[in-house]
Structure formats: C-alpha cells, structure tokens
Length: 197
Image (cartoon, rainbow, N blue to C red; front, side, top):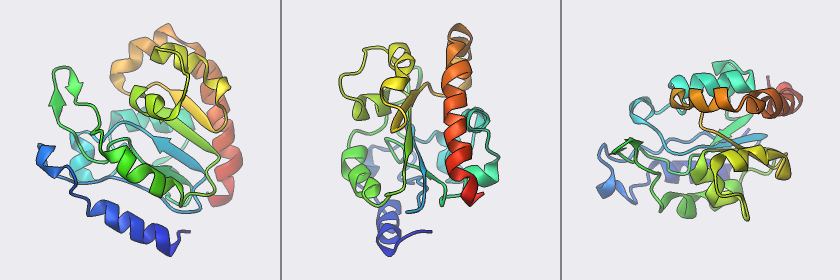
C-alpha cells in the first residue's frame, strides 16, 4: 500500500531533471517504494541496462542480490515489501574503471523526503561505499572493515558489498559475509516480508 503523499513525491522524482545536463543518457530516475515497505535497499546508481529498462537491479548484480535475499523477482519487485532508492537515481556515465560515482546532488535532494514516507522500514541495506559513507557515521575507513562491523548498526543499517560479478574475488576472500551476514538478512526478509508474499 502507498499513501497519496508518497505517490505525489514519486511522480515528482520521476520527473526530476535537476542534473540532466550532466547525464550522458539523459535523466531517467529509477526508484521503487510504497509506504508499507519493510526493507529498504540503497545502492549506488543505475547502470546502462537499468537506465534503459527502468527496472532496478535488472542485471547480473541484481541476480546475486536476489540470491542473497532468497527472493524471486516477483517478491523483489513488490514495492509494498521492498523500497529501492539508490544514492543516484539516474545513470551517471562511464568512468575509467566502471561507472562514474552517483551524482552528489541526488541523495540530499530526495532521500529525506522519501524516507519520511517510509514508516515501516526495519532494515536498510547499504550497498557499497557511497551509501555507507552517506549513512554511517564514525565507520571504519575501508569497505571490508565496514562490512565486517555490520552488527554494530544492525538491524537498522546493514552495510554490504556490491553484488557485482566484479566482486566475486572479494566474496571468495571474505567467506564470512555469506556465512554470517547473509543469513541474518535472509532471516529478517522471511520474518518481516512473509505477510506481503
């Protein structure tokens, strides 16, 4: 379920052209939310595939993220259960090694208005360094140290690595993440999202 206020806000966000002149493919804000959502996923920014489809996490990274959550696409894309609000809502462009960072204007402009309309969120997954740097105060310097300290912020915030195939080596070097953090996240998902499934 959603509220009229959130519906109006989502419409405004999807019309946002605030930094369009800096976006190589133009503006196409990608977001999923409903006021009944219990899990919030804050990632980096859409890639080109997601930009063109308008469907968040519609790529190999999303496949791994859904495996971590133990959710099929139908449940994952149910806004009544899961809100998806990246740090940058539009594709930022290509950099020297992968995509550019999320636009810095986006989160200060839209995150607080969105979060104020999501009263039922009990867990927020902070995927990657940009989300972790924005939301976690006094955190360790490296992503690995931050993710290792996930219990410090649980269950409100859970810092996790990006599920990109490029992080496969990191996951092999840090098996504790899938052995300890992923089961904790799955337990929350199954306990709190069951009523909506």
